[in-house]
Length: 346
View 1 (cartoon, rainbow, N blue to C red):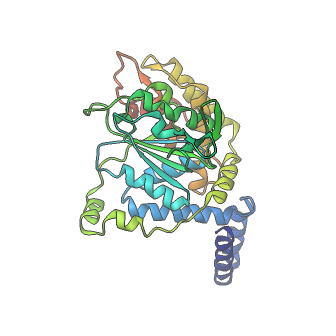
View 2 (cartoon, rainbow, N blue to C red):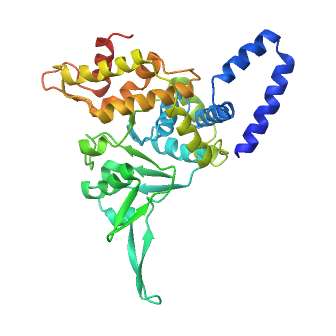
View 3 (spheres, rainbow, N blue to C red):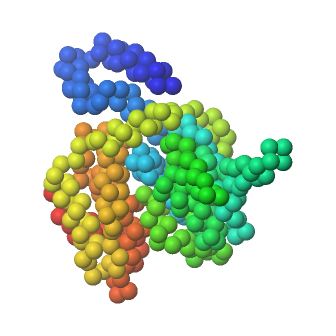
């Protein structure tokens, strides 16, 4: 897969160099020299993945970019919204486009931790217990409607998400690499939901809301082909090896000292503002930096800009902030906007 992408990029580059003026070529070469070896081909693969996802999830380019940034930053993703808005389709599309092994766990009120992690089964012929892995052992795991299960079942995800391993009967079992959990949940005011505790929410790098499609996109959905049929036709734009290299590349994207000061100022404001009861932890600070770097890579920036921090801030910080009882800002989006509006951009 990697060689095919590089070969294609090499042929395309040769055509562009033949057709462009010398000035255009020099500008292109200058841009390419800013990237590590092979990053141009990998970035083109990410662009293709973004385009493929956009053909399935219509009118949600911002959310798609954030979802890809989350995975490139080695994070787990929580998608919260009303039923029927494409949460599950987005998760399934991510697995298909990224070329990862995929398992779906439908969370229900009677789900047990062993149904998720797996169990040790006695093998009579060998006279011993052998571990039978559960559906959590895949490179991308969809925890569908995670807040419909009890807290006991939800907790089965914690060790796997944080440590990339699970412990069963005193033995540790490693997760495959790369490893992502994409969870969907319905609004907590709906019947039959169990809110995720703060400790588990903090395990998710980002929380997204898809929202209703615009009129043009909804019309295309109504008159077009069923999204699940299109999903079966998607070809992987990446694979696990390329994804691991992309994660290494994005982690090294340059971030200036003034921009780090800006991140620290945002975090400090969340801890000191009278409108916020619970501010961001150091884990939240690290999440902002990692997500901003990934977003800069996806948007073809030479380094991290303030725009990248602002673009990912609500998705990274919103579910970690808790409004004070007397605050005029009640929702995560309102709190995040308040923080961004209150801190000066460098």
